[in-house]
Length: 358
Image (tube, rainbow, N blue to C red; front, side, top):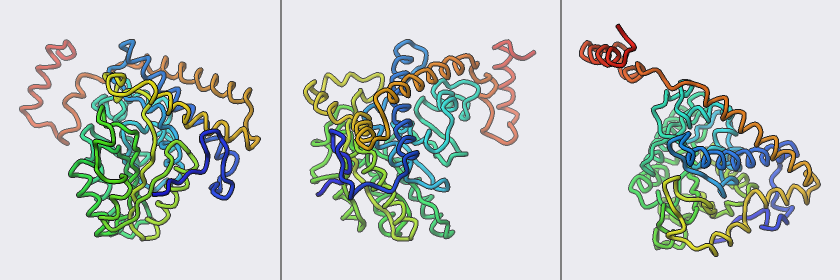
């Protein structure tokens, strides 16, 4: 299966394949990719210091997040993974709001009830995700079916890892989407490992993308470390879905540079040579080289931008750490419109013991 690539690893590119993006768009994509990289660096550092409880980094997968997010329309609904902070940022979620979720403070929209990197931002059409992989694919297909029924010109974007393709939910979602031609884009970030399981032991298929054929719709592979290839493929799939032509499965070939989570040691199951091989295909270095080749960015401008983003990240983290945790009384809210008497008794007793009630 031919892999779509616009920008090569050294920054060279094929002008015939370039998508129609303006200079401001390209520079904005670059800034967002750098922001995600700094977010990952800061997140891992904070977790190691005990300042946040958990973290799942997405270093090496920035092109997948930013390229796909830029291809969506504001009315579209995103069902991202825990490695998609860039999806949140591109769709307009303020950086402080993302850090509120990470810190589970009282400003967090989910009131500290979700695991860090498990985003949910209703105002930005970002649906809550859960740790069990594959489950959100069913939700995305269901929402897409509803949109088709109502003749609503919106698309559902569902991000998944290659490990999710071994789950029953993947089969159910793909089959339903194929039969009912739902307006959904399945975006598989094939980062080579499902925790410690390499992709070669995940499936006997020649690729992940080829699985779409069995469900009656198109699947193709792209270079997931090429942000323009990601954008071009996702835009094409979204346009097709919006036109009523059904779903698409995109397999983005990328690499998870860090561990599965802050609790994982990837050196146990992969070699340094393999990591070094993928470092040469770093999506940010590639896109930076592309912008330089296009005369849109200089080394000095890039250094200044990195310093600016780093300073902003430090300032935001410091500010959000000063926000207290959610009130203990929030443990009893948002379940019933009117709290039943037995739960109210428990709440009153709990608050008295905590010294927050008479």
